[in-house]
Amino acid sequence: MYTIRPCTPADAPGVVAVARATWRATYAGILPEEVQEQALAQWYAPELIARRAAAGRIVFLVATDDAGQVVGYIQFGPRETPGDAELWAIYVLPEHQGRGIGRRLLDEAVARLRQRRPVERVYVQVERENRIGRAFYERVGFRPVREYEDEIFGHASPMVEMCLTLPSATEAAT
Ligand SMILES: CC(C)(COP(=O)(O)OP(=O)(O)OC[C@H]1O[C@@H](n2cnc3c(N)ncnc32)[C@H](O)[C@@H]1OP(=O)(O)O)[C@@H](O)C(=O)NCCC(=O)NCCS
Image: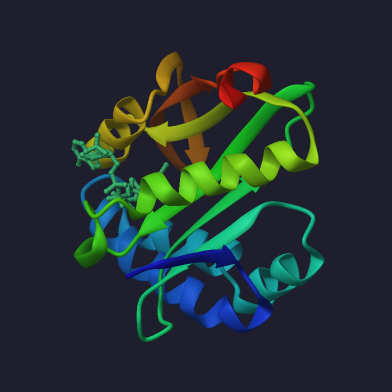
């Protein structure tokens, strides 16, 4: 059984461990190791994750297993246009993938976002070569809207922007 709940500062080491293991599996052959290392060091410094969890400004959830270990997480970030939201990150440890955790994290995070403000569209940026990520997003309803090239710590990475259009709040209630 998995539990989905808000990330607390004490979860920071667990989130970093999930990020490191899942990045390695996901981005092998897509992002050079030194690029992964730089990105992880900057974006997943434990103090940064703990501060972000403590601040509570973004929707940041973890999935934990029976032993209380973090096995996945989801983070949303800000996006200027009203009605739009940006999915920053969703990662589930490889050995726990395919069991419904990703879908539960997304559903729960979207529900919590919508308690804070109206959200009609969720955007995500995914590496074009990330077949697992793209298959998941397609399956849960995202559609590609734009292809572009991003520079990630000096590495040119082909990207796809995908968008999920949510049912309106009234439709969702019926
Ligand atoms: C993407 C990810 C978060 C999905 O989490 P998950 O727990 O494995 O996904 P779920 O088990 O909830 O799957 C939800 C749906 O997507 C489908 N799906 C998931 N992975 C899939 C894959 N590789 N190929 C095809 N369909 C897939 C499932 O079949 C399921 O559909 P269903 O509910 O209709 O049966 C997880 O696979 C992961 O961490 N991947 C690596 C990291 C990554 O790419 N993150 C996105 C970066 S932008």
